[in-house]
Amino acid sequence: MRLVLALTAALLLVRPAAAAEELPIFDAHIHYSHDAWDMLPPDEAIAVLRKAGLRKALVSSSSDDGTQKLYDAAPDLIVPELRPYRTRGELSTWLRDPTVIQHLESRLARYKYVGIGEFHVFGADADLPVMRRVVELAKQYGLVLHLHGDAEAIDRVFAQDPAARILWAHSGFDRPDKLRPMLSKYANLWADLAVRSEHGSGGKVDPEWRRLFMDFPDRFMVGTDTYTPERWYYVAEHAAWSRAWLNDLPRDLAEKLAYRNAEALLLGERAPSR
Image 1: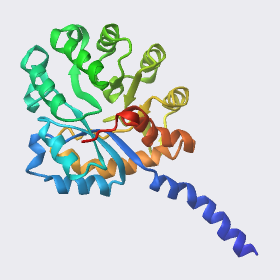
Image 2 (image 1 turned 45 degrees about the vertical axis):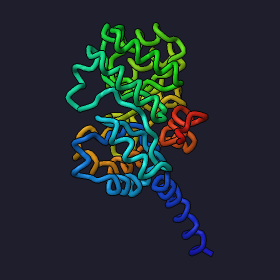
Image 3 (image 1 turned 45 degrees about the horizontal axis):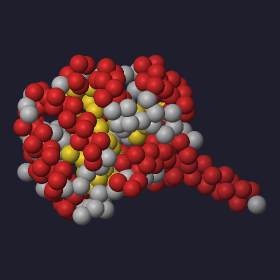
C-alpha cells in the first residue's frame, strides 16, 4: 500500500511538468526573410517549427515571398501576415516611400492574410500618409496591425481608427506599469512577448508581470522573433523556455498566453484560405 501511495504521489508531482512540456505554442512573431531562405530552405524551416511543438506560427517576411513559401509548404501551421518591407533594408525608409502602398495593395489582392506587419513606426510618424493608408487597408480587409513602436504611435493609430486591432510587438519594450494604462485604455490592444525575458526567469513569473497577466488574461501571447537567420535555431529553445515559465501560471491562464489568445485574435473567422 505504501508503495502504491508513493507511486501515486510521484505521478501527481510529475504531471504538471509533463503538462507544461505538452503545452501547445502559437508563436506570434516569426520572420522568414530573404536572408534566411538559402540558409534554411522552406522544408527545413517547417521542420524547425514542428520540432518546437508549435501549434501555429504567425509569419511575415521581407519580402513577402518568404511567407508564401512557408504557407505553401505547411498551410496547417503557417498563419501569414503581410510585411510592408520588400527587403530588410526598408525598415527605416518605408514610411516615406509611397511605392510601399502599391506593394501592399497588390499582395492583398493576390493572397490572404490575418494582419499587416510587423512594421516599425514611432511617434508622429504614425500620421504620415503611408501609415494612414496602412490603417485604411487594415480596416478594409479586416486585418490586425502588428505594430513595433511606442505608445504615442498606438494612440495616433487608434485616433485614426478607434476600431483598429493592434498587436503591440515586444509589448512596446515597456514595463508592466507602462503597459497597464495602455491596455486599460484600449480594449483592442494586444501584446506579444517576443525578445522579452524579464517576465519569466528560472521557470518563475515575475510578480509584477503575473499581476498584469492575471488582470489582462486575454491580451498577451508568446513569440520568438527570428529577426536574423540565426534566430531560427532558437525557436525550439524559446518554446521550451516559454513552457517552463507558463507552468508557473494557472493552467487556464497559461493556455491563453501559450496559444488561445493568438488563436482568438488571429484566426477566428479570418483564418487564411485559398
